[in-house]
Image (cartoon, rainbow, N blue to C red):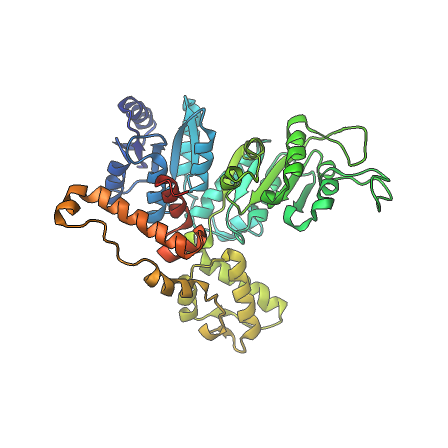
Length: 458
């Protein structure tokens, strides 16, 4: 029986959801707080956690962070107030499977729970997945959930914001969404915002008319005109300048474009899929990205997990790249040694799938036998160096002056103060780089970002 844990500090909500889900055939446990939920999760196996975001003590976001640290494959559905879309988007970035807004529709929450707890059928295989999602390799629970999300959101016309680290395959996910959509027979037009010079970006997006500027020898359609009735994919959306962001917002609001140098507007009907490796909320706070544009783009946020969160897919990816590059280089490298595979399984892949592909490509090119050995693997030393630095990163802290003061503080305050000082020291050592500070502290970037917000470190 599918087991669900409901976490909410309002008893009425816990009771309502429990009655609803028990009637649907689920086994249901409840917890009145985040800390109690973690206690339950360590002592019992659950297939799904449903948690409110706004709770006293440990809130839903901190609970989510803790669950994803220790149980990354456990799906978590967040319940958020209708007036707090930023909470929902942040939760999705932290790895939530989905969210529902209060007051929610019963059929909606049933559908979300069904998707979150569904397991691949026995007939689901790597071959089935590769046919349905060409180019996306993975059988891990994390990727199965990505495939399910693609199926769910593809059939809607909603704009999608795909976020994830560089090298995770965001464009492949965008292509899959288009391929499963109702406009799959129309054009999928991609553009990489970081690759276009600023002075040409407006023309590339919105087109231009003859004579609009030097070199404009004829009319040219922009991205949105080319993708009309289809899908426009804007990769690295965080690189757009404020002026272009303003004009893009108008296109999303009015569904029309005005070519550079033109006098007439042209109607367009385009589904927008955007992608970024940046944390756009931080860009908004810094004044580099428009908040209204963000919410227009992130109607459906979709997080692509880094490879270190789906290590079970590494052997499958290795086999795929071995076949690809053995054929390309006309070599007979058929497998990878067990020790070489062990080395890869212990590696964190800061460059994600793209880095693994490069590692295997170099390995096949360098290998003279039919099997890749450890010495043919070229791994980045970045992580190894940072682990050595981590041992020196944070000196011991004297949080309390004596035993009496120590016990007066209590365990929670003592741990919080120690954690806070560790983070401050790591940020100072890395010139305020959150990514490198997370490396030094040996925690995920997501977890560090949450704790920085929690302690008001800025």
